[in-house]
Length: 220
Image 1 (cartoon, helix red, strand yellow):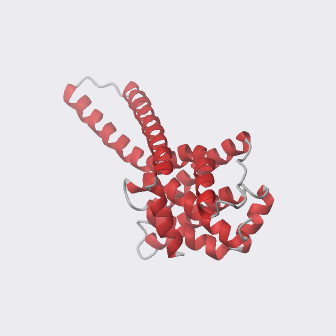
Image 2 (cartoon, rainbow, N blue to C red):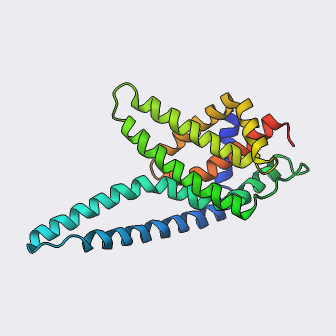
Image 3 (cartoon, rainbow, N blue to C red):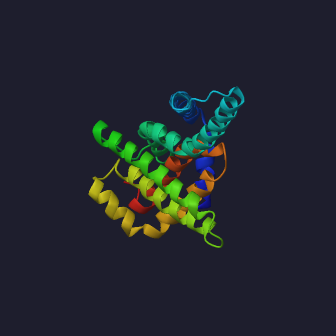
């Protein structure tokens, strides 16, 4: 398991992954900037006060709120954007693990798009719920790791498995290896917990789960 973690971390620094990383981070930054501008204009449109100092105070409060919101959105947005590069990342890892082995097939564009949107929405939802749980004494951190570990493990493993199996077969394979998928998911959740670094989560998670899939599926 730890060897898979180390190999996945090494992959992130390799040239093929750096290219994907640059594209993913650039698109993520562009999306977040557009969201910032849109929400800022929308908020200011509904705020009209005569006092200049009060207007300035409100503008600052809106700005702080937007910063907090974008910090929360950064991980799901990066996951959503990077999911469109999933097959490119997975193909590199598969070739690295077994150059002579079978290569997975990209998911149909419609399925890939729907899966990406679902994953982004689920990531945001679980992030919001687990953020609330963080403030529950004695439960917060464990609940956060468990919720994110389950979600991230499930989604990334199924992404990797569906390059070789149907969606039904991928879910069945995940269920039959639920323990390993969850543990690897928790490792991804720990990665998510590190600010800034968590923007690279999709790259790390993809390489990690491709390796796990190869282990449990017997190399395809």
